Image (cartoon, rainbow, N blue to C red; front, side, top):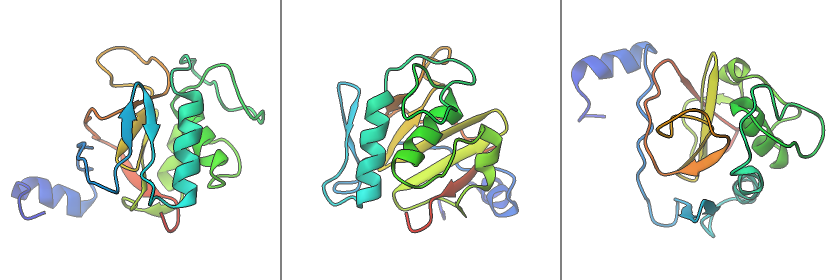
Length: 165
């Protein structure tokens, strides 16, 4: 943190801003993205392996506001919180789907070692093993859940993570 401008450091310490998600490849800790599919690092914990596989199942599905919140195992489309809920539920890290704002209180505070959720009112996305899983900010409108290495701003979000991950 010593390289952050002093005003940004003060905002972070005051809880007024989140640092932007910036993609950075770390050998052995970062999933690989190949043709839109994430490949989890072999050393990743089992819950992370399952979360990556779940994200792969719905990557490329269409975006529909409010979709992905059913109790069914699989839906035909997903919004941001529906896709985040699907991935966490598949890994056994969430009991039932939640709206985006509720993720601001999910799990434990701060970034995780393997999974970090960036939540604010109106949007949520997650970073799993270094790859962003998101329905938006891809250079256009929401297109549905996708993996990306593209960085994004995180203004107004809080960082949360599943316990022990």
